[in-house]
Image 1 (tube, rainbow, N blue to C red):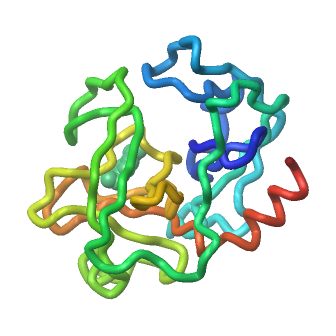
Image 2: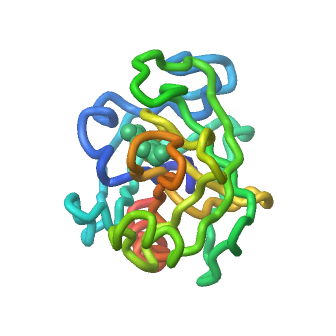
Length: 203
Ligand code: 4AZ
């Protein structure tokens, strides 16, 4: 997930449950490691988007309310896209996360990974995925020929533009880094009103 308020994390609804039961480690660069610049905070509650559909994965968003706000001033919330406009085709987006580095691998990287991928317009992506891309709530990103992608374990994490504004949440994809099967992300602008309303209610 990504910190979007001093006591709220934005993640994916499909991550709901056990991963958040014990709490959230904010700011680590090494998986499960409480370094001096990271904080461990208990979770108060998980609020999945009320329109989340586990069949289509539409509205794959969840807000996680922390028991306490982050204290370390270096742990600043990410800006979340507040515009209706989406990226332009081929715009460079950056996705980060912890997880595997190859499809089918069970080796998890303990080091935070980062990769640049290109925004793919809705029509192109929807035809690659045979109509499974839900317009206005999903976005796709990948590179020609495949080889760069968010991987298993990255779910719920942020994809952001070159200004550092979060555009999407890691959601799903067919395989990992396959040619013509880009990563699919929940499109933050498609849920911005509810995210704002929920934020003002719980934060
Ligand atoms: C996953 O299983 C996962 N490339 C994350 C990202 C993508 C697919 C699966 C998209 O966490």
